[in-house]
Length: 325
Image 1 (tube, one colour):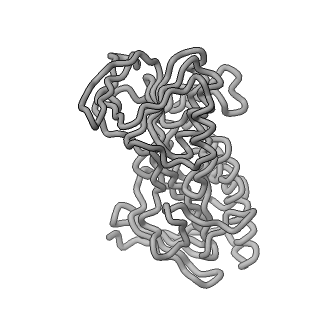
Image 2 (tube, one colour):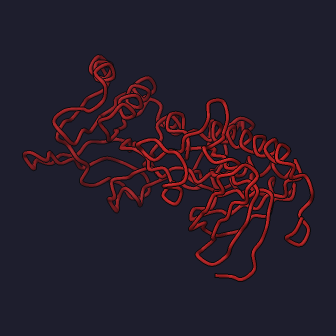
């Protein structure tokens, strides 16, 4: 581990819309934030070819380009952005205490406040053809990308409430939605099952799994296998949506921060405060309902404002010079 210890007012962990928005607000508040990008600089939007629902881009924008813009804006106000992965944290339990973070197992950072924006990772099927066509018709967010398949035939994989909700959403804009359920029944709530059953252009295939996503550059179809009979058949579609869940990136916070059963960080109502003073959570790491770039950005703003107010409460107003106050 590096012998040099850095001290900052605000450490931001994660570089998606939440992290960069938090950085913009924190930097403008003279908190001189330090942001570590994590394993996927830019977050999930770097795997999205077109972002069409973020305000301010009337013609849409390429996902990676949007994240570059956000980074530049954060840096413009003084955010220091570093490539690196926070691998260990130790949160101070008393108000005004100093939190520590270890980056890449070697660099120690001390911080008065920490904003966690590590996001959540969508679960995929793990098929080579699926991974090859991510951004070419394979998506993990129907609300984000469904618009691009208006009037077309699509498929969705999943059996829970999220899959049912996204299937009904797609049914309003797509000609046909084929829903693939691995087991012989759905695990969605009865209300959602009834909604799916009553939607004429949704076809549910039970005991069905994707064997291969067909297409070279873009999705052209699916090869489906019945896991009871081993029968296979192909269907023509242009979009495949995976709705089998997300995993919040919170493993390093276990045992220190309050989480729900799925691992999402709990925040106090109407704020981004976690159970540890001076530690805040924003974006998909604490939001399992909306999971949109705009809502992530909104909570990033909230986290920076909460952190600024916290620093004022504990009397941290002096500028950090040479690692000391």
